[in-house]
Amino acid sequence: MPDIENSGVLILWGYNPSFTRLTHATAVLAALKRGMRLIVIDPRHAGLAGKADIWLRVRPGTDGALALGLAHLMIERGWYDRDFIRNWSNGPLLVRADTGRLLTERDLAPSGDAGRLFAWDTASARLVAYDAAPGRYDGGISSLALDGEYRIAALGGEVVCHPAFELYAQLCRGYPPEEVEKICWVPRAQVEEAARLIWQARPVSYYAWSGHEHHGNVTQTARAMSLLYALTGSFDMPGGNVLFPAPPAAPITGEDLPAAQRMAAPIGLAERPLGPARWRHVIASDFYRAVLYAKPYPVCGLVGFGANILLNHANGAYGREALKALEFFVHADLFMTPTAELADIVLPVAAAFEREGLKIGFEISEEAQSVVQLRPVVVPPPGEARSDTAIVFDLAARLGLADQFWDGDLDAAYRHQLAPTGVILEELRASSDGVRVPLQTRYAKHADPDESGSLRGFATPSRKVELYSETFLDHGYPPLPNFVEPEIGPLTRPDLADRFPLVLTSAKPALFCQTQHRALPSLRKRSPHPEVELHPEAAQPRGIANGDWVAIETLEGRVRARARLNNSLDPRVVVGEHGWWQACVELGAPGYDPFGPDGANINLLSGTAALDPVSGTEPLRACLCEIRPTT
Image (cartoon, rainbow, N blue to C red; front, side):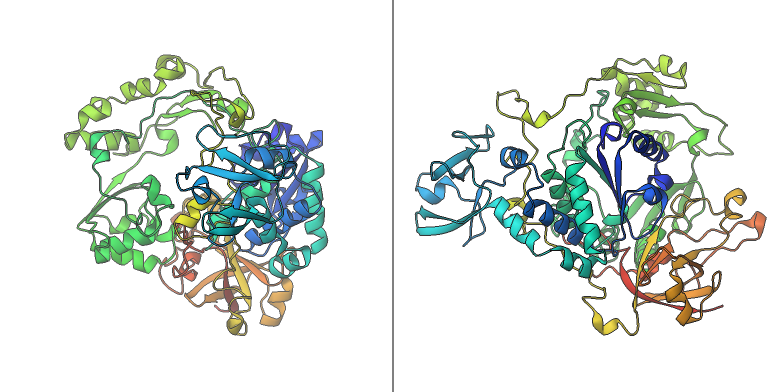
């Protein structure tokens, strides 16, 4: 979490808390008043961009190139924390040029330990061993090389090696300011100004969210951003991104239960072993494939809780066929969504304020983390609506699993979860503001010794921040955070420029929550129609005026929206709205076909051919499009 209260400069990257997390927005405003600096990276001039010292109007889908370009300037000009990189990254470790593998003791001696790695000490001109088990070098580290080329006598002959940091720096050198300007459409002077501010205004914190995530190379982009952040040396330090403690609640995920241990390998694990399936999450396209084609095994049933997957993901028509093919589908929701309509049984769910809700720690700040709160029922649920938890507990009991769900007693479950915190359930019910659990924040926890006396380090094979990842290499991915252009973009597909000259991205409307709430008159009357933002320079030659109905077209299809002119956009970028389908009967406002060309489902315009190779993320926010007047 960003320690906004103490940050010198905050970077909001694809994240607009004014629309999504008001507590962060108010914390940012308070910090700006005390002198904190702010960098906002977003294609739109929205929310806190108006308060930013620097707004970087990045082309959608090119955040990775921007991160590498900022890192290049910081490395080139010495604007990075060499001590942190030397001590707490694998930057000093030598990488063989011939194999791309880290140099190990087994490369040097037949009986060598493959777990012992090496760096080069420039003062003594010799190799220094590093053992990941205790997280220590055999000797001092002040002279370990971060750059250069070294020829090492190995078993098969001399091998050329470079420090991992040198390879990272070489990658970043491919993104000087003029190249970043070409790729990202951000003026080079602004790139230089941002790099300087990041270094000079430390400590740095940053928060990145879905604005940069819904792209086809998101994993490497996230790595590039996090390694840029590592250069600042601010991680887990006051004013940086801090691992704040949380009240010690009892785990309730059930991963330790025998039935969970016997489950089949998650769908998608074979294709993307480092992706969501690693934590037993399933992406939509893999789920659809399993239902329709029994790959890797048949999926015949689904229990859904509030996930309107046909609107929230790409390829909704494909998803609809998958849901129709299920032998049994039960869905619990607040509304009859397009997803719920395909269920065999729909269970009505109580809204948030129609049921209790336990929250142990709020992921906002150090102070908020200490709060344990039981939100009370404000109004009774209508009809037969019940909480998700009550539905799960009763379903478990009907399946003979009551003993694993506290015999259906929600209060018993709450008490189990709260027990390690020392907070009493009755005490929570008597205090609507919640109860604070005393917490003590320790910084730089990576430098603490663990139970064996070794340095704790980080949760990586080397115990270091891994600029160069052999884990990625082992699975066929680039070990460095390479930038890859969007597959359907202006630089990768110039052949489409005449037909689709604009870059389409999307954003969440301020008034609504994802695909919900367009049926509420108080909100719908303020935003009656789906909109697409475009620059007047893009609208004028197309004969489009503010408020006109337009068709948005891509290789994947077409939808409709009303044009809203926005002078702050890049004239080559247009921004649609996600989540439109609901009608509002009270106002006579129409609903929209979520699967057809006369509807407004922006996700129909994104294909699934170019998923992120690591995570399987769909490229929902960067593709080529054209906009034409329609009725």
